[in-house]
Length: 312
Image (cartoon, rainbow, N blue to C red; front, side, top):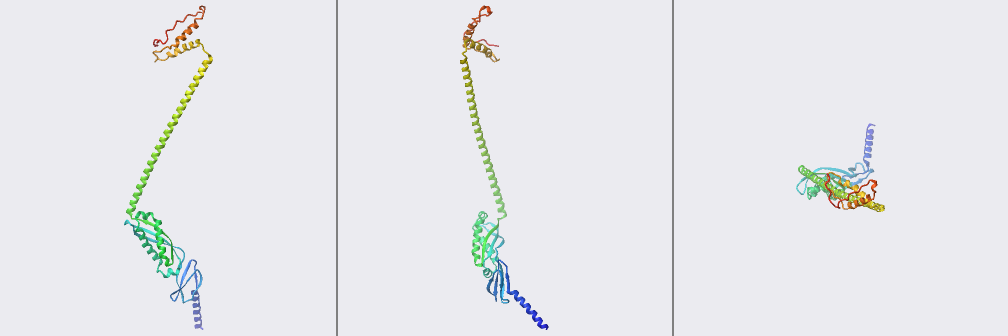
């Protein structure tokens, strides 16, 4: 009985192994290459798949999702004979699992080498300044070459990025000095423009202020002149409306004489010619008084426009 049990156990184990090899579960976004006696048979897609045990074998399992592969810095010589180190990042996706398995031995290594050679060809036709400022152009050219070359490998290059472009240390120092000089130059220009604009605005303000001040003074003078004219007109109209006689005018002249002689600097004063007529009128007015009232006669004034003696 023991040999039969052993045989049964062996058969069960073989059946179990056969079931394991027969049923193949492929995850989503993956594919598997099946070979029969070393020859490609078919590609297993995601899900439950049945294969012939001990005859069919799984050659390769491939991830169909988009992959990101960074490549180490590569020294590249520019057109002006400067060595720069460039880091690249490749975004690719396997579209044909059979081609990616049989058309190239290692598509990752092939993409890396193709990226290096293509990058050297592109950068070799550019100088350093253009290399630093033309990343989009380099990315587009590199992606075009890689996508065309990897198409037959069942791979699609979706995107290529230059992660870093590092020129030599001496060139970096020179570029930093140049950038600092450019910034200082722009700062000096902006400061000069600010001073110029400030001076222009100050001059415009002073000009506008002078114009406004002159206009104000002109209006004030006009208003003063108008007020004085109005005052003279009112006085003139008041005098004519009052109809003053010779007596009143004579009395006003006599009141103005002390004011004319006022001041220490007035060493000489001139009697106007009209004062004679005023005094005549005043004398005539006083001559009408009767002697009984105690009034006396007033001496006749001197001829008009005669200089009076100095007043100490």
